Length: 180
Image (cartoon, rainbow, N blue to C red; front, side, top):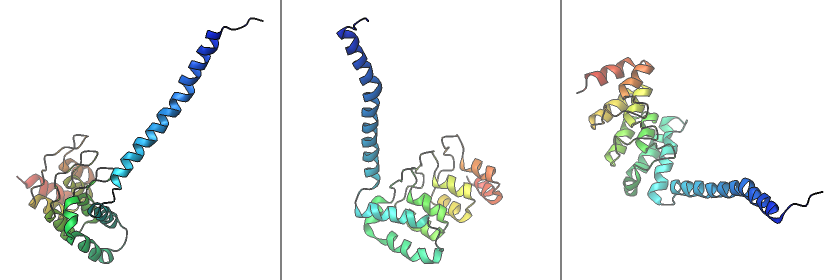
C-alpha cells in the first residue's frame, strides 16, 4: 500500500474548502445583503411607514367607501409629502398603487403632494403605462392633465399606447392617439 504525501492531503483539504466552505460563506453574505435591502424598505420613519400603509390600503380588496376616508386622512398629513415617491421592492410608487385603486380623487391628491407622474417601476413602467394597461380612463385623464409623458417606453420598448392596444381598451387608445 502506497502512503500519500503531505502535499496530497493538503491539496485535498484545499479542494474541500473551495468546494464546500466557499459556497457557504457566499450564501451567508448574500443573506446579509438581502437583509440590508429589506431594511431600506422598512425604515422606521413616520412618513415612509405611512406611505407603505397607504400603498397597502390602495391595493386592498376592501370596498372603496370603507378605505377612502382613511386614505385621504393619510394623504393630508404633512410628513407624507417627503415620502410620496418612495418605491416598494417592485419599484412601484404610491401613484401607481392609486392607479390600481382607480379613484381619480385619490390620484389627484397624491399628485398634489408632489408625486412624480413619470416615475418608473422595475420594468420601466410609469403610472400612465398602468392606467393604459388596466383601461382606467379616469386615471389616464388625470395623469395626462398633469403632463405625464406618453412617449416613455418600458424595458420591453412598450409605450402606454401599446399596452392599451394589447388589452383592447379602445377608449384609452383613442385618447392616447389624439393627445399632442
